[in-house]
Image (cartoon, rainbow, N blue to C red; front, side, top):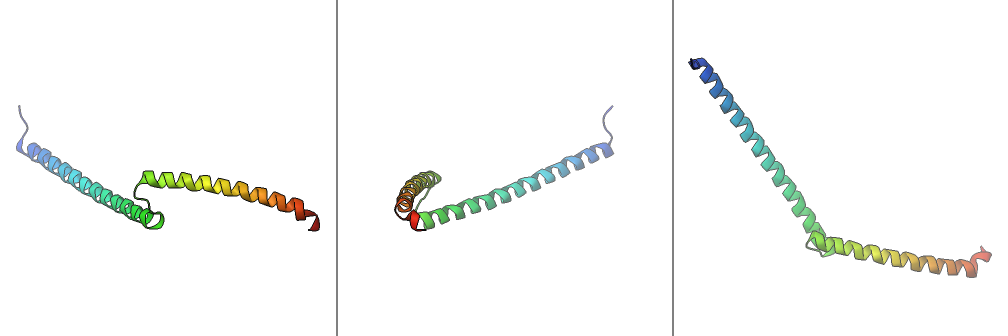
Length: 92
């Protein structure tokens, strides 16, 4: 014994509704992806404009170089400050 016509119609309605929901979700995800890509593109433009780098890899290299420079300058400052304290610390 098969399904009656109303059961087939209900099943078809369910399938169509499921398809519409899936299609809507795909459209929402596509829109979210597009917004995320726009944000990435904007950040890359900022990196290019502010720091002259055109890729994440270049930005990471620049960051490491700047961190190394910061460390060197910090050491240089501390050495100079210690020398200054030795020379003038008793006059404070």
